Amino acid sequence: GPDRTSPAFYPAGEKYVKDVIDLFRDDPRVLMWDVMNEPMSTYHTPTDEWVRQIWDFVRHFCDYVHSIDGFHPITVGIGGIDNSEIVDHVDVLSMHSYNKDPQAFRDEIAKVRADAQKAGKPFLISECCAPGWGQPYEMAMPIVREEKVGFYVWEVMIAKSQFTPIAGLFYPDGTVRRIAHVEAVAGRPVPGLVEKPD
Image 1 (tube, rainbow, N blue to C red):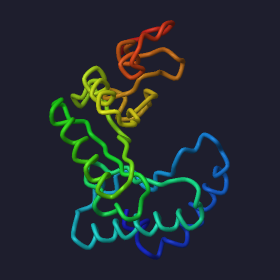
Image 2: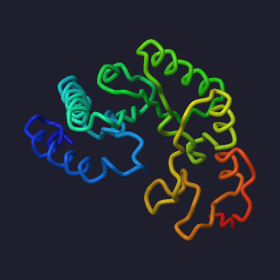
Image 3: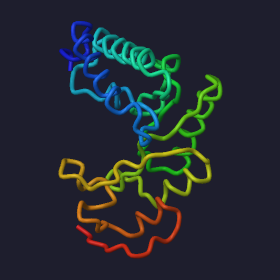
């Protein structure tokens, strides 16, 4: 919200970011830092001033993370495919897509790929697949593999949240909602899974 993206919050935000990076910078499981998820996914009225404040915040913290961790690359989980506001501040471009149409999904990948090539940077899909929003794993995953692009599905765990009916592969007890979903993500049969449809 506005209280957490204004310049007055930067010192407290920097302390938090430094604490997290200091704690995990040597953890081999850290691939990169995602500085902010979907900066424009906000319930606030998107006035010009508010939009400017958000992007200033994101760019500031991209630069700050680079200044304290020169090893790990950074990205911003863009809610969509337009990286133009942060392309000069990240190492990896990102896209989120829940497009239901296979060709439109391919077109989005092609657009981000072209932007990444122009910037001389890699890109990845940091969110895709949500059957509850109309993008099934069985449609999206073959396209992702054909396009040879790195990806994260959203989300691996079936959380206890408003998103429970929309997406997720595994319940906390290790059972799965649909074996076919897990196999679509894995790109191969996965033996030993127990299905517990909801």
